[in-house]
Image (cartoon, rainbow, N blue to C red; front, side, top):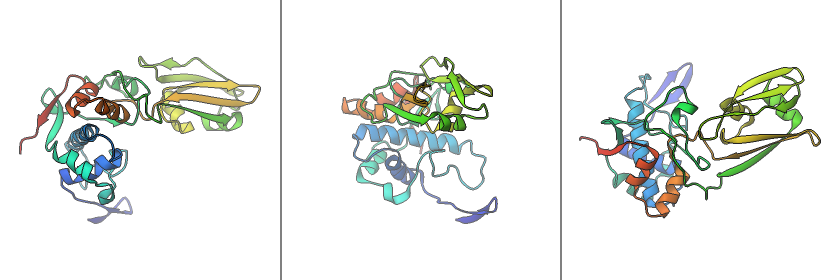
Length: 262
């Protein structure tokens, strides 16, 4: 359906849940990954979609096709491996106390996933930090360097940055807040705001300001918010022989895998 929404044309694709997942799994994970990892993604994505559908306030559609929800690229991302992962887990979801969970996931945590309450406004019993197994991820560690002038411009209205304070960290080592001092004042920024301003991969980072070279180097770990299932961790566990049920129950604590009623 094509309709007018907020003055713009919106194309809406109505698709059955299982058919939708054929593409979501391939849009969110490489189709060459082990079947147990793809199955984990299928069950997580099914749970997430149903959770969002039950709470949507949009009368036209349940979720959009971007990573704001979960990626969906249509037929081009369907693959025999993703179809197999969806079909072999058909109608299976992750539940907590009998309810389908918001099965949030991310690319790589950098060694330890995060408590939802330390990233967002409220805690969630099944979204607690656990050890990750993503050391082989290409985004496990990263580094980004800025000229001091560019860094200062991106940070905000405090003039040229003169020093970086000691960050306040979450229990799992992500930057909750950090004080940045400049020639025209100081500002306390949330880690997520620094990440957004600088285009960083995660909030698990350290900042080093070198006044001699007038460069700022940021060293970090992981890619994404760090809450819920780590996709690269799921791949590693699948390679070690873990089943998709074991993977999901590791990343979503105190949960059960359940079959939807037809």
